[in-house]
Image 1 (cartoon, rainbow, N blue to C red):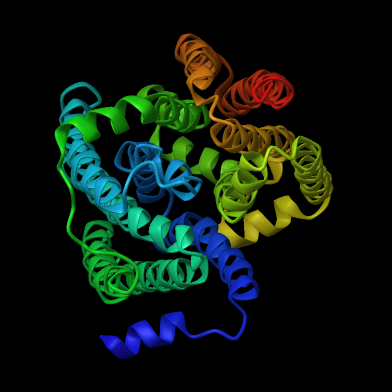
Image 2: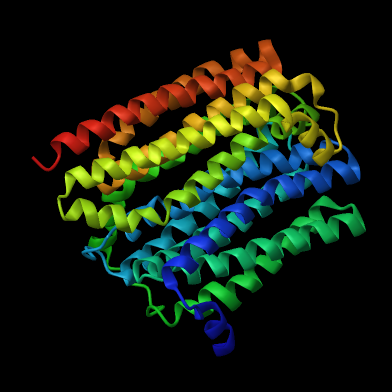
Length: 421
């Protein structure tokens, strides 16, 4: 076990290692769902792909319940308002809530959406997979807080790789979706214990604190951030939930194939912004507003450049690549893909603005923005999906993301100008 810790912690340049491994980790995280869906589509058609897609979407949503939005708060808590033991204790509670919510959703799916026993089990197992990620996240947050994001991302990379390998190998050999999910979850837990949990022993005491008065303060303070992140994921996945309710599993698979570039943008955005949290927080604590504003504009420019590149790819080679990757003809979905990519760029801005708003401690304002947008998504989803199919779903997604990015951008720049005055 000590040898594994030594391997994870070995580096000649901590900062360089952190950025390199964070980039690799972002790629692994973004690649996980597409690779699994690709293997499913190529081994047994679209139905299993549709089941997997909605299971992964539900799991990605409930992941934010397990994390409760504390990662960014924890990583930017440079003054250590709360101890790691308190963050650690809170994660047991939030992951327990995630488990209860998972069971509740699965029962709801069986009773009201006619989920089969297999679909019930696959949804539960994908949520369990994300539950492991949610729990490891608090340990990774401590490593980042201690200046060793490289250790956290190495451990996370290994887990993602082993999850994908185990799922894909079992699927190819057995063509059994349920068995593939079971093996994937078991392997993920085993790797988590060998890497993240093992390495955490060098950075913190793994004895949680359950002081209820402190827990209450933490959950109250973190609630607006949790709601914003949870609703952000709900808003981006609202078309998938509508397709699950009103269309077929084959349509779900097709939508997820077209939606995949936005999903990749979404996951990469979260991981790209993770390394900057502590740096931005330190600049903000130093009240160097000019430098802080410059950092914000620089990151916005990077997002815009990546978005222009993504649009160019969508207009040229994306459809042939996606069709080859999934083994499915997607030639008729070029316009849908373009709308998805534009919406994905807007989502990257929402993730970034959300991060900045958290750092400047205006996260309570996020609640109203996300609630309003989520209500719009809830009211409009059925109409767009039932009447316009996949095109309706992507237009709904792009519209919601643009509105949300605009609202959060206004809050961000208002806060930078006024909060420290």
